[in-house]
Length: 213
Image 1 (tube, rainbow, N blue to C red):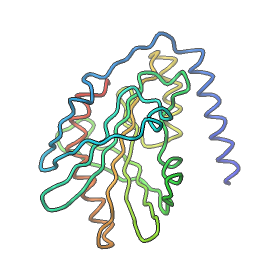
Image 2 (cartoon, helix red, strand yellow):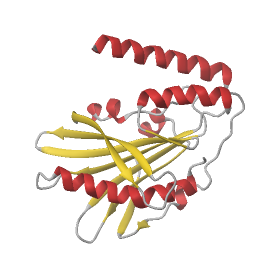
Image 3 (cartoon, rainbow, N blue to C red):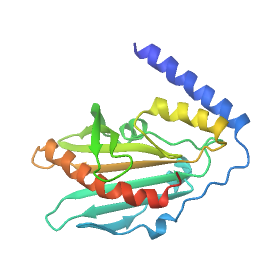
């Protein structure tokens, strides 16, 4: 089973790279607004911007990004990262946390999907990928998704498939990756997930002001 999944993933990667190399040309899709203007207060959440080391930005190859830690007065925390790529046909593909987080010493102990319902919003129902991470006695919950060319995508495989389809039909390979992380305090994973989803409900309408559809 593991070998089969590895072969499928390898074939998808090769197909994606070939299609992007020969089928997408002259792209210059821009953000609607730069992330430097992203609000540092979202509801009751107050943000403090941060930055990765330059070598990390060199590796991920983003064209614009935001790294910001949001907290509330009662001590809840969410670490937000957004990365935007104008084009993914030159080898700068969106990186999955499933590959990056273990390299930082975090073990993935659970992978699942979470449903997010956003009242009075289109789409009103979104699937998010959930990871539970552990390093020593510490645990974190990650929620992430791919927001690309008008779609909310909750699968690495479908992200690559849609990337190929849109490179052919729309001549676009721009895309965004959105990741939320929060520590599990008092061994209460359910509360951590709720906090992340509450933040995501406020975040997604704002994102659509920035990320091109």
